[in-house]
Length: 160
Image (cartoon, rainbow, N blue to C red; front, side):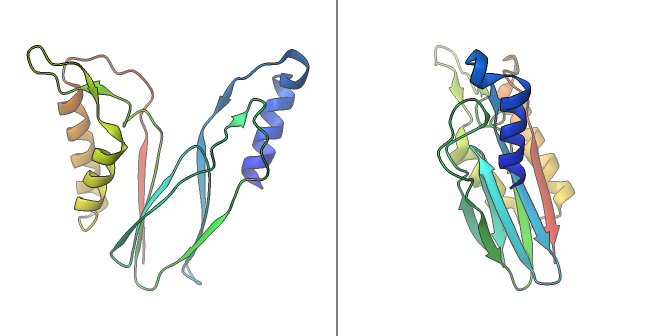
């Protein structure tokens, strides 16, 4: 419901119906009930990476954004449960889209979602502070001298 209300608000405030604008944004949102140990997730083009009771899970967001004219139904709500622990990761596409890792005469390549998910899942057993450092260091090493091309957000939280 929050994503749908934001979509309508952006569409209305930017007068996209009247002016035909296509500006929009990607977003993901989680509602966590610690007592029931449930997570509700909805995404506008952005996924949820999660480790629930040591099991890695990826939930893709819907292929639509907040704003613009793409109005294909309501955003889907995914409900997940955990018994012992949950690590949740929400992210923008800026991390995975970053170019770098260049050697002599090789084309620039993106980090990519697969490398990011492997990095997250491989280190999910560590405290969040350590994970944050590893994710940041990996990004800086990958980027090297390349210019950062987009905003970058990787947010993680642990629930027991």
